[in-house]
Image (cartoon, rainbow, N blue to C red; front, side, top):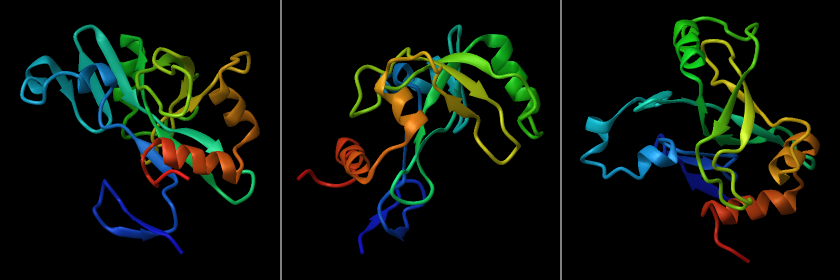
Length: 168
């Protein structure tokens, strides 16, 4: 059985990684580290860079050949009022709120360009990151995978693309 060292907690876990996340939106990550705190305000869930507002979310791809899902921990740029509504609801259950529109703020490996891809964000309860849903009309491969799921071959391709495991 394979195992991996978690980049978040530093511990070794059995099995293969079932998620990949970014610490910041790409535009903020590109700022030299020593300048970032002067140019952007951020923590592990929220980020403001100038007039841009970002929320860290979870985009789930269901597995077809095993239980559970692969989770992409992406940042989504949202409108300022939606950002502050999320901040208001941060410690509450926001799952009854209407979904808000946004755009993916990370380039996801193994896909055609995802930066700026339109999505819908559904706030969750206080212990879960907001859920990202691809619009049903999107012809992006990510939308198809979210709708129909991924098989083990595609899961392996994602793990290779993210650098979680070596290639063939």
